[in-house]
Image (cartoon, rainbow over all chains, first blue to last red; front, side):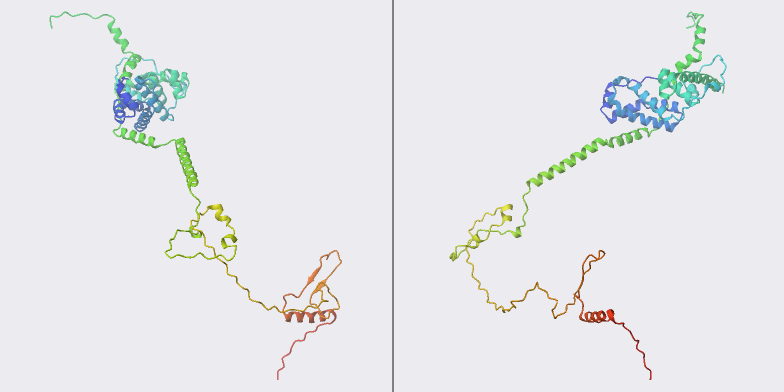
Length: 176
Length: 229
């Protein structure tokens, strides 16, 4: 997660509803927003809807932002919430009792961001959402569970399940 | 460069490298460096369209406030207009008196009687109530000519001094065509009066015949037979 530094003057212009400044902010942050939405939903159309809703919300509510320096984090939060709202139906959490636990094999490989991204998008929707919120976006389990409407223990167990699946998928991808 | 000395790394270096190979450690580092995806080029147009449409939506309280202000303005202007507007008279019914300069000297008519037309006629209540008309010219006093009524000849009728219209005697020779039924029965308490008023002369005659025949005689009707020769 690369932190984008935004000029305070640009933020002030965006608050003043300057269309050029809004476009400039969009250009600077659109990849961050779209990538987060696309990775959580694994659907281009839904990710574009989330992108549009997010920027409309940002431009309308930016006046209420108390700390303009936290604009990037605020945009990411809005994006995550919109993505959860959009993909609420597909975020179904499998019962982990019925799933066979994979062996604790030692991981002896190296992987990069591209490989991890492919592995993340192959995860089940519920586990993928938990992994994205907790492991990538840095939300605590309590908050992630609240956003997704599940218990904290479900969040923890789903994260553990997601990591095991990722390990297996990355190994498979490396062997291919 | 060939002559430079070589240094041996620490023995723990390999272990450290292996530690970094751990899945969770790699995950922490790589998750910060995930690739970025480019959204569609039309995404900004969609956002602008959405923003413009959002601006057009006016809250309901603003609409209500505007409507109330409009109604209040119309009512206020109506009241003010009604207040300022003078009562509208039909000018055709009013007499317009203008100062007319007459080149010929006209003598004022000499009043014969004390009562002039202006004095006799009472002032109209309608005109005094609505708008007083200030007469700029004095009304000319006009004498009313006395019209003599023609003498009518009324024929004198000599009435019998003994005649009393309220007095009715049964011994009157003229039979009345009115029938009066008087009953003391409870069921027929109301007095019923039959009159021949409005009936034609033929009907009256046929009724008289029927009444005389139906009470005491039997009426036999003969059919006319056609005689063939």
